[in-house]
Length: 284
Ligand SMILES: [Zn+2]
Ligand SMILES: [Zn+2]
Image 1: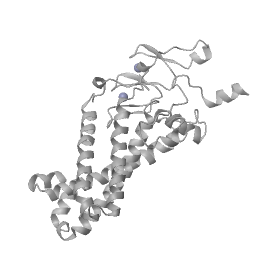
Image 2 (image 1 turned 180 degrees about the vertical axis):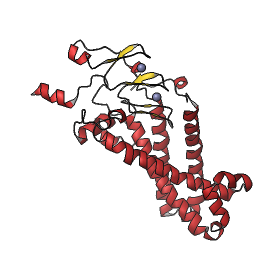
Image 3 (image 1 turned 90 degrees about the horizontal axis):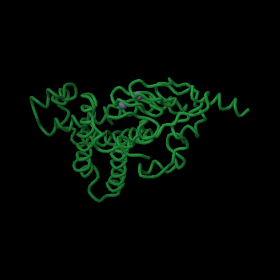
Image 4 (image 1 turned 90 degrees about the vertical axis):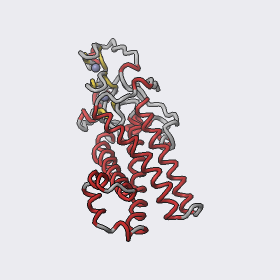
């Protein structure tokens, strides 16, 4: 694994900057809100459920932030490899010239206009991480989405109990509806902690909706086939579910959910791809 230097980890356009800022503000604010206000009031400091949820929250916040950082820092561009096109003409024919990079690049590598470089087994450019998702950082991207989905779901449930049950008498008022439908107006006209709590609650369910639809609806059907977004769910590189998962999470994939620091070597170099059908034909 090769890490990018910090100066290369930066938003390159306004859309990237806005999405990253939203995450950088939203994640700590939601975490502090739930840990300092919601959790102690719902369960009482030191109780069994307080302790269980507190420990789970540490695990979730660690994995959300660490996988986000790993996704941004792990270099998956062609710059991290010394590319040597194969001598075999059949294999070489699968490589293509990238005019922007002025280089012959491997199959499944595509140029990103935002990052301005070709990316190995490129899936897409992620606005929230300000980098491309490809062969070497797909694992961290999937875990970031997974833990964001679980974390925001738990936070949404706890926040819902806090607002609609514990503080039922306060939040069942017209201002709640205004905040729900036009949070910016409500915060401007009547700035208060209560409006802020409601906004945090709304953003929590928004984060859950986005992470769930990205991971389960959009990416899962693609990644279970060993494919990437640009290949439109083709089965050219489908090695079966287990092997496809290993291509993303590495040889020790059963441990990778614990932390992005768990080393799990990928079985492929991300460069010398051969479509499965060709591969099978050669073996036969
Ligand atoms: Zn390129
Ligand atoms: Zn990119």
